[in-house]
Length: 162
Image (cartoon, rainbow, N blue to C red; front, side):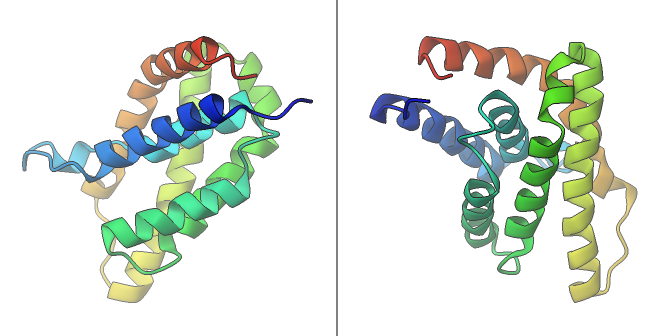
């Protein structure tokens, strides 16, 4: 198994950077509650595509970066992304063979599990109960998965990442 070239590592980092930028970009008030978890979708894709190279450690570091950017409790996003990466790595062989619509539903459940961790931490710390608007992005993640899968697969093929 050969190592990734600098260009290939930069390509992977660029996809994460784009996801982070999409995640912190301001959205109009009406659409703010429908914001997908871009970083989670990209993380799941790379965990499925190259599981031997993207793992729990990378997910933890990205989560810590997100904690700093979002101003959340340190470790909140890190824990959620690490659990998400673990689950994606645990089931990546099954996810690869699913048809795209089943893959979208399965990925939606994985990301929903990650979101539930964040919601539980926030409810324990702040004492507020999660509401329906907290779960709306979970549906958006399912809808976006097939499109982002195709885009990221094309990026991976052009960069010759395997």
